[in-house]
Image (cartoon, rainbow, N blue to C red):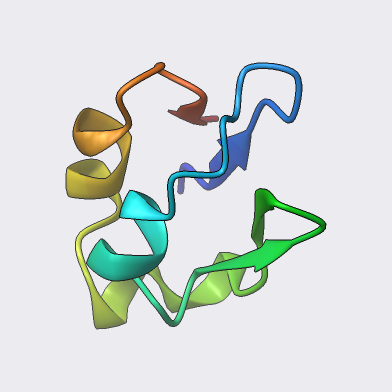
Length: 60
């Protein structure tokens, strides 16, 4: 099963992913991190990937 990954160098800290999937993503030091790899079933991680304005999130 693919899991979300955030490229911290690309991330601008907008927080869109946290709004889409708060159980999976959280903000740390003005960057998004994946806090719940196993929680994609509680939201749509693919929506977070497609919503990121700088394409900093991928599924691997």
